[in-house]
Figure 1 (cartoon, helix red, strand yellow):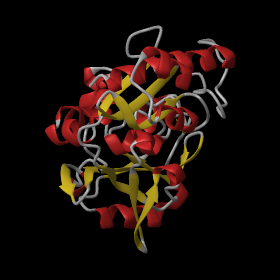
Figure 2 (tube, rainbow, N blue to C red):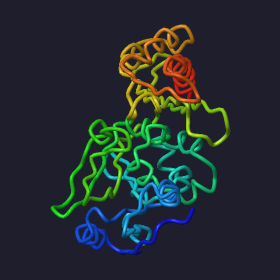
Figure 3 (cartoon, one colour):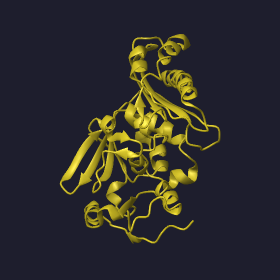
Figure 4 (cartoon, one colour):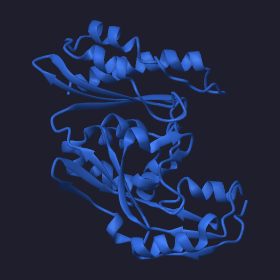
Length: 284
């Protein structure tokens, strides 16, 4: 289908974009990379009167170090995030997840912040961001505010970003030296994950000192497998120990049931994928 007619705005600064949002309110829609919005427009599931394109705002692109954090601009493409040496060094879990995100064409066009702001529970970046304790910087008319990942994802396709606000950057605490792995289960290549697990582990002499585990598509938002994280601390990085800890991966989850599998199937998958992800992360 062809989208309904709309006016197109392409501001060059965050201030201009915020002014456009304030002027047009509910009639406006933000577009970043467009990989999620354009299909919605084509199917006429949403018909905004104004589309505000953030693609010309250079200040929203780039990756830099800032103190103990790695800062990723919201309009940085998945391809740039996945290939950047700072991300590989300080946030390997993000690099690992981006490798499995869609296909090369989408990774070259889609944006890091756009995917996170879309908040699809089956999206590949939410669980890694949550596991790493990311912080989201949001700009509005009154200035900027920072929201922790635990509070950013509120519900299905719903985040803490207000109607007249824009996500500008994502701050990720450095996890230098941590092993990381993203284990994704799909039936067809480049598909949204039926279930996926993001695991990052800090090991000391073959023993797991710290672990962070995020779950994809196990509820209406990304989830932390906190029971698994607690059970892993102090354990050897062996199949037996990790398997025992991973058995609690589905605790507190509410996975969907659909044509790809029912909730019980996904709960079982979560335990299997968690074991694989943690073992791979602990191994390097």
